Amino acid sequence: MISAQNRQLPLSGNNWGTVIASISLLLMFACSGPTKVVAPVKPEVVTSKPEVYNPKTGKFEPANAQNTHIDTVVWKESTQGPLIKDEAISEDKLNNALKKEYHVAVLLPVSEDDLGRDLASEGTEKFFHYYAGMKMGAAGWLDTSVKMNIDVIDVKAAPDAIIPILKGSTMANADLVIGPLRRDHLSETAKWSKEMNVPMVAPWNSFRTLENISENYVLLKASLPTHCEELSKFIMSKFKPSDICVVGRERSKALMAYFENELQKLSGSEKINLPQSIVKDDFKFEEGYKYMDTTKSVYIVTEFDDPNIVFNFLRHINVMRKQRAVTVIGMPSWLDYPRDFYSLFSQLNVIITTSSFADINSSEVASFKKSFFQAYQTFPMREAYEGYDAIRYLAKMLATYGRKFPIYGDISTQYGLASGFRLEKIIDASKPIDDRLLNIQCIENKALFIVQFDQFRFNKVQ
Image 1 (tube, one colour):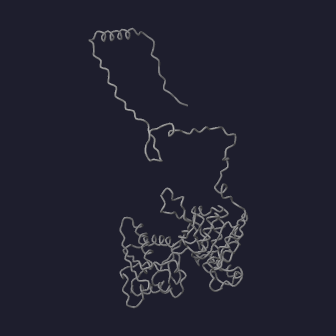
Image 2: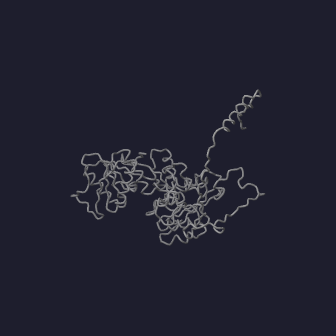
Image 3: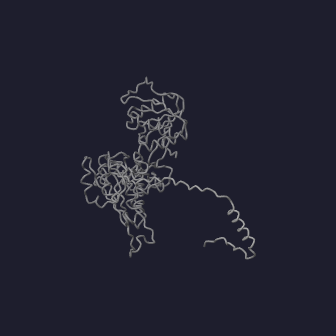
């Protein structure tokens, strides 16, 4: 309702005084002298002919009937009902219908016959453990309303061994692919995944620069840059930049620079100049070494390829420090180094990041370890926990979101026996800002644990 203010009419009464005053005013103007009136000069109006831009010539041209034609849209009433009903329509219902049964193809570098043998087979032991963990995880799948069918396919080592597999009937029915191992096999499978619009998971490698990757390509283990980012946050929360030195071979210069850039970002406006101790790739570690800054208390060692090089770096740092307490920040591959390293790890307070970590103090881990031993007469390796966690997480995501589950992985962080899951979209930063969300390179699991060596084993820090 709109309200308006009332306007009162004038009261009726004697208006002769008003009439007399008006007549007197008119007489005064009538008796005054003549006044010369000058007509105002009308300003000249300059009109320009309308012009329109011609995209073909790149110039403005006079408007005419040909280049100013306007299309007219005539709207008509439709007898059809509305396209959108009262019930909410999700993306899954439109383009990703949820199913009651899913098929998962696991591409393992072992034969199906070997899977029935002893898990301690030399060379492929960790893949047996991964598969055994997956079997236990699948057996414990609690959602009886959704069925998961898991097919294991042996992938030979030959470069072209993956081609006939991708053309087979098992892959034609797959809703999710786990594996394979080799980089060239991963690249071919990523191409197939992109063309068929089927999600695939790389469970053992963290290659983020493969050809043909897409939003269907999921790295289940964090890439090396992500490890650097997480370690940099931890370092800046515990240490001062002036206490840090970066150590590595010439081949690690890019990684050393990445650490420095990440630490610079976290420091804000304060300029960081990290001293770098760089040795040649063929450097001979002799007793007369003179290449490290001996005044620092934190050493970031960027070597991860060669355990022998790592051992020599750590041995030299341990000798150089004398009685000073130092901390060494290492690489994720160090988690699997043998007992020969444990003494140096302990003396140097080694800290690393890892994508999975089974805490022996956890009752759930102890229960799994017992069940695994009863089933396979051997204790589980780290890969067994990873396989168990992976299939349970992926089955849950597949049942909840269907094939498009990778783009929903950043909704929450979830944890299993030894693994965390926080899927994040890797965006192509080279694209314009407005287009970046449309240019997803791949999906990466960025959940990491920080562990420190103490009491002859790694322990979780955060």
